[in-house]
Structures are given as C-alpha cells and as structure tokens.
Length: 235
Image 1 (cartoon, one colour):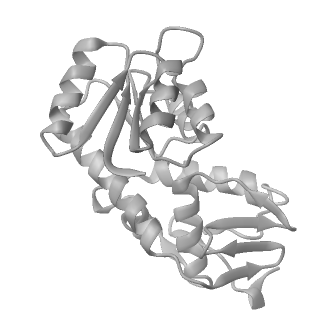
Image 2 (cartoon, rainbow, N blue to C red):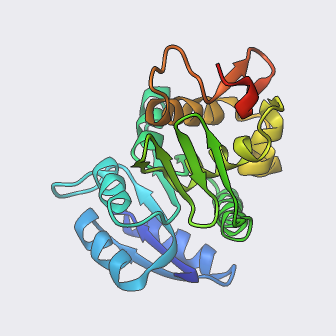
C-alpha cells in the first residue's frame, strides 16, 4: 500500500479536480476516476492508502456497489461523498464498508481533516497489533494477524469495525464511554458523533453475535458506553 496515494471516484470533473488539487497541496499523490469500474481498476493498479468515493456515479455501479466490490478484495479505508444525507443512506454506506461519510456540500479543509483522521486510524491499527489473542466464548481475535473468528469460522470485518472491536477487547471488563471510543478510533474531532458509533456497534453485533437481540460479546450501558465482558463474566 502506498501511504501517500489517494484514489478519487467522482463523476463531476470540477469537484474531482478541486479535491485533487486540495489533497495534492497536502502532499498526497492523487488519481481520479469518473465511474465505478474505472475506479476499481485504478485501485487494483495503484494500491492506494485511501479511496474517496461518490455515491451517484454513471454506469452500472453506484458508490454503494463500488464499496462492496472494494471490500471483496481490500480493506483500504473508504470515505464516501454524497448529497444524500438521510440516516438510512449513511447506515447503508457504513454497511457497505465505508469508514467515513461526508455530505455535500463540504469544504476542502473539512475533507482534508477527515482524510488525515482516517489515515491516522489506519496507521494506529497497523502499529497497535500485538502477538496475543483474545478469546471470549466462541469469539477469537488474533491481534497479530488482525483476524476474527467465531466458532472457528472467520468473520470479515472492515478496518474500522475491527478497530472498534480491538479497542473493546483490549479493555475487556471495562465500560468505555461513547466519547472515549469515538476519540480513540475516529479521533478527537469525532467525540460527539454518537451515530457513527451506534452504526458500527450494530454492524459488529450483526456479524459476531449469535443473537443480535441478546448480545453476549458487545454489551451496552445505556447513555454511558459499551464494553466486552472478560471470560469470567461471560453469560
């Protein structure tokens, strides 16, 4: 992965050029694609550190389709750009594997800050691995290989989903405040973005819990935060 390379998939030429110039001013190497299929080829060729992805794209693939396709072969961080601002659209974006969701219109300084935050989280994930494993019931997290299993079956997580789960596991038995998780995983500027956290917890429970309506591995303290029990407290 090229830590300074970003791929933008955006069909509005003026917007793509504006974002490209802004990011190049921050020292990144930026490539653009006008549609989903061209963008996927560019990602495979350039192996970027980050993808910026529009939702409304020409052709037979919209941004959600492209995000799903990316996740089939890469855990590269994805920032979605969209004029669609409903919570349902945002949730769909996260379910498709996005790490952040920026609504249009936006300022270039705002987007640059989001890019830095997402890349910082990716860097922390890469350097925070240890050689140990976390085991809770049928759930196993291999920190050294960054892989998650339940009942021996591997569970595919996005990079941010894994970061949330890793942080909870490394603090098993301790209730982590909403703001604490957001600050650690997303960065201090995201400490009030509670919906981000709720979306990711929902996604994680859907993937790792035997019964989402009666979670065993990710528990909540309403109005306070979330926690994973240690093995002695597993019910």
